[in-house]
Image (cartoon, rainbow, N blue to C red; front, side, top):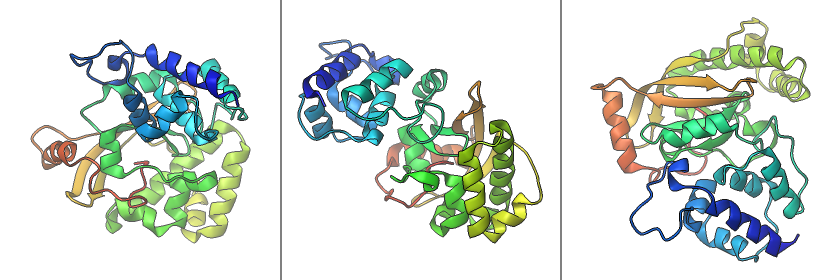
Length: 287
């Protein structure tokens, strides 16, 4: 790995981004138009010290997960992301699917502008790619795992902890919705290996999933009314909306509540509480 070239590339990409491009205020004391180091670190979910070391050409070789997070934070296009991986001497991951996928620019641009409501971009298999701070406060951050467990659909049927985000009486509804959505995704992908492996694993591990899969209900989840269990605010009733990318592989999710409702008031409180009461693994982070 060429540390000096990698560091110079990070700085060049950071310098070109305006704060407004990523939903940050410009502020009166900025000496340069680009982002500060600590802002890039925050957007990528890294510590400021760690990012600073990278930009100074020091430290260990970053992992593929760190590189993917930096590519999203720095709004790199596909070619720029590939170059970042080459400079770090890491294999370039497939761009279409999985948690390391490049967030599609149109969805990322919209996410940057959704600063007052929880929002995140996920894959069609419900793997969280990027989320704003309000989404992290509402549903938690995604677990640092690879493989099928990166998908909320997989965790929903294999890990009881994943279901804690919704009240128990709502679980049957969400199970049906997840399976019908996965049926639609499987049809769209046309026999994709990743989907076939996930379905086979879920059929082995979950009788509930197998029974629902055999009903052959098919429906992409476009909108849904949710009751989300928050550790400090209790049950929050919200509407969840989905905007699909053109190829259907990614979705922008955002949560809202009608003005004057208890849910709207709870979202206001959420912006104050933030993530201070959230603990790793407590929520599922995919909505």
